[in-house]
Image (tube, rainbow, N blue to C red; front, side, top):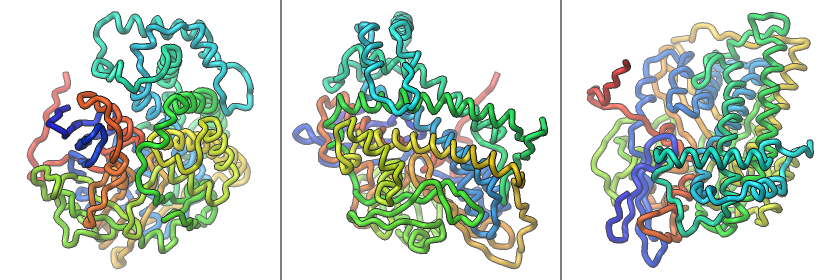
Length: 569
C-alpha cells in the first residue's frame, strides 16, 4: 500500500471478490479526491457470441465464484423474456428458494468474514473476560420469537473462543490476519465485544455452510447450480419418489433454513446493532448518491404480475414504484458510459443492447481512462443499487414488513432513515435484507409444498429457436449486491450480442462524461484519515458496498496468450 505525499494507493483491496484498486488524495486529514479502478477485463460477453441462448445461463454464472446463482437466474430470465417463455409456479418457487438462500449465505459471509475485521480488533480479544462477554451477548436485542438464550453465547463458549484465538496467535503464523490494522486509533470495541464478535465469526462459518448446502440440494451443485432450463427447472418434483425432489429433501432444506434463520435473527442482527452503536458517527460518513434503484423480485406467478419484494426508483427524493420487469422506463433508462473505462465503443454512452466489450487498454490515467468497469447511469443520473436501495424502495412502497424491520434496526441503533446512506447504514440495510430473505424463503417453501398437492409441473420446455426471427430480451434479479440485469440479442438462432450490467459496476464505476464520480468514489470524499500508512477508513467505506469486482470485470488476454499455468500434482 504505497503512500506518495498526499496520495494513498490501496491495490488490491482485499477481502472482496476480484481485483480493485483505490486511490485517494488527502489534505488536512480528509480525502479530497478519489478514484476507483477495476483491474481486470471482463470478456465473457464476447465469448457468448454465436452460442445457443438456451445454454447462456451455464456460462454466465462463471462471471463469479460467489454470485453464480444470481447470474444463472438472471441469464435464464433474459432468454425467457426474449422468447416469451412462461415459467410454472413451482419452478419460480424453486428458483426463489435458491436466490433467497444464496443471499443469506452471501450476507453472512460479507458481514463476518469480509468486513467485520474492519471494526473488530481480534488481538484485543485476548484481554477479554469471557464471563463479561457472555453477559453482553445475552443482553443484545434480537429479532427471534423464541426468546430462548443462544447456546453459543454462554460463558463456556466465550472461553472456548478465547482459547482458540490464543492457540492460533501462539502459532505465530497469522496468515490472512497478519496484516490487519490491529491497534488502529479508530478501533473502539471493548475486549469483551471483540471476543464476542470473534466467537460469532467462527460460528458464522458453519451457518453459511448450512444454507449453502440447502442451495446445493435444489441446484444439484453449489457453486454453479445445474438445475436451470429455459421455461423452468430440471429438478423433477415428486414427493413420493426417491429419484426426485421429495418430501424428505424438502424437510432437509427446511431444517437448514430454520437453523440459519435463527442465526440471522439472534446473532447477525444483534451483532450489527452492537457494532453500529459503537461506531454511530459512521452513519454520517461515506454518503454517496441519494438516487436509488431496485427491481421487484421473488416472482409469485407465471404472469410475472406478483412479487414478494417490491421495487422502485428514488430520484431526488421522489419515488416511482416499478411494478413489473416490463416497465418501459426501467428498460429504457439504463445506459453505460465508457469515457473513463478501457473500452473502445462507437459512442461513449450506449444502451446495454448496443454496448460492446472491445478492450482498449492504456496506462492508469486519473484524467483519462483508469478502469475496466463502465459507468452505468439511470436516466442519466448517478444511481445507487444494493440492499439500501431495496430496503428504501420497499419502505417507500409501503411494505409493512420492510417498515417493521427498518424501524426496529433504526431504533436500536439510534438513527434515522436518511442515515442509511452511509458506511454503517449499508451494513444495517444488508442485515435488514437478510431478514427479508428469511421471510421470502419460508413463503416460497410453503407455496411450493401447497401448490404441489395439485400440480407438480416444473418446466414448460422450449423447443428449437426460429432462425428466421430476431429476438431481444432482458432479465432482472435483485442480487445480494443490488440490481442485476442481463441483456441479449438473438439472431439466426444464436446470440448476436450479450451484456450484463451488474451491481458492482453500478457502484464501482469510474467518472462519466460529465465528470461525475461513481458511488465508491463519492463515498470516500471528505472521509477522515487518522493514519496515512493505515487507511482503515478507506477500507471500511469500500467494504460496506460488498464489492464483487469479479462480476464487474473478467480477465482474458485479447491476443489469446496464456496468462497463467497451474500445475496440479
